[in-house]
Amino acid sequence: MQTLKGLNFVLTTAILLFLVLRRAYSGWRAAEEKRAHGAAQDRERLRSLSAYVQTLREEERTRIAREIHDELGQLLTGIKMEVRLIENRLADRDDRSLNPIIDRLVEASEMVDATITSIQRISAGLRPSTLDDLGLATALREEAALFSERSGIHCTITIEGTLGELPPEVVTNTFRIFQEALTNVARHAEARHITSRIAVCDGGLILEIHDDGKGIDLDDLQDLHASGSLGLIGMLERAESMQGKIEFRRELEQGTSVILTIPLPAGKTNLSSPV
Image 1 (tube, one colour):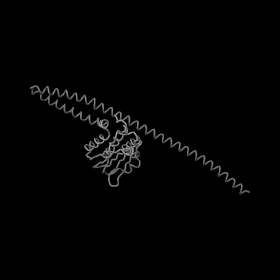
Image 2 (tube, helix red, strand yellow):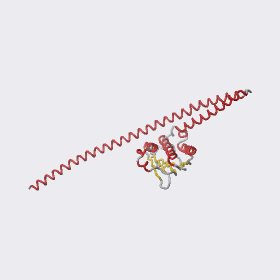
Image 3 (cartoon, rainbow, N blue to C red):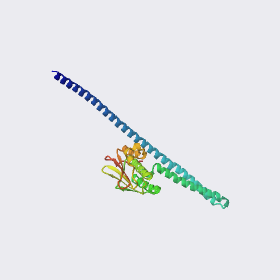
Image 4 (cartoon, rainbow, N blue to C red):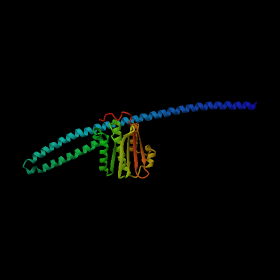
């Protein structure tokens, strides 16, 4: 009889304990799901905020680039024309005492030319006009050529097929990711050559950049935020803002590959070119 009572006590206790643990587990699981959902919402808000900030930054870059190029360029061109006019009128006079002044005017004209060249370079650095006027393919080719000229690293890009008219955010972010990838190679890779390609196929855009340098640090790939690689983090954020992904791969033989993949929903490639 005592054994039966003891068994009932054990069973009752076990059932109560099971019910308590099940309720506790259900509460913990609900709390975890709520926390995970909240974390996902926070990540989405941060992603949206990052994309919004990048959009504002690009708009401001475009505005400043156009003002620098158009307004300052026109003012300097006007100054150059006035200097040339004065120079020509003084040169027409048969007075050798004016030669030093004419020489100074020639120097001033050359300084204006150099300033105009600097303005064009700064404007292009902020926002290449080619990107808006001629599209992504031409802008990438020009950027590769300029990079080769500035860095001494031979850089080529192959445009496979036609890219079509891509959404503005895809055009801008793809170009900026390409720029940042080249900058990272120049700073860290000790490379001699860069080969890259871009294509639109299977409903998506793919950009591949490969260098023959020493290869990316594997520790940097483990945790980009901990490594402080702001350039790589910025590239990731740009890719995520387009629902795309970017892969940094250290090649076994030599160098690093950067692979950007961006989905392009049906009809998106027919949007108007960015302005």
